[in-house]
Image 1 (tube, helix red, strand yellow):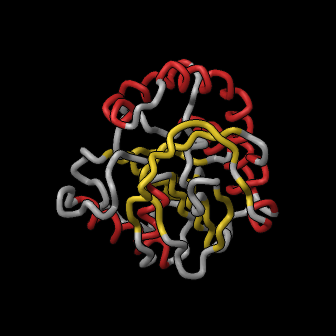
Image 2 (cartoon, helix red, strand yellow):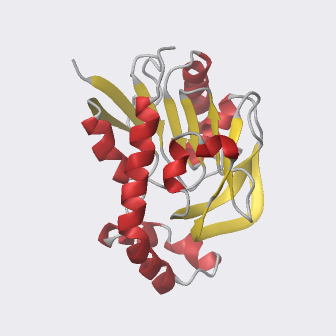
Length: 235
């Protein structure tokens, strides 16, 4: 019997990308739940074997503007409090942090582009070691305080909190290892055109960097997720 992976998706072009092949190889049947679904965050949060929460261009603290965020935080809280395997990317990592009572707030910096992580000693002991020396994609303006009981796994010169783990089953990644940065990266560049313009990002340069790093990033991201999945524990 296959395992189930519920994927919470906020915008269509920010999908599983590099993460889908290792999920399927590990025997997971992937099901997206899109923000526009009537059932978004209204099913049983404990039922899926795995939950993946993807990114999006809103802040966790903007719940007055986007009321779905309150429901999503409660949905995730039920999951992580039960110790069920949960992975968050960018906004997803911030939502997990918020569900654990940690504040999420604007960093004052638009960290958009490719750079290497500074992986902590704890991070090097786990699956993040596959990203050591790899130029990963950063695309965020918010950050979070490390949730109580969590371990910081990575940082950059600009932002201290780039990844954290709570035991073996909860992983938050502030950066975007899942993003496919080859030809399909154009979806990101068009979808976030207004943000890129406001941040004065050189789009042709960002596109070229995406192509340059695509193959190494894909291999490292697949190894990262495969390693994490292999280390999951029964709650």
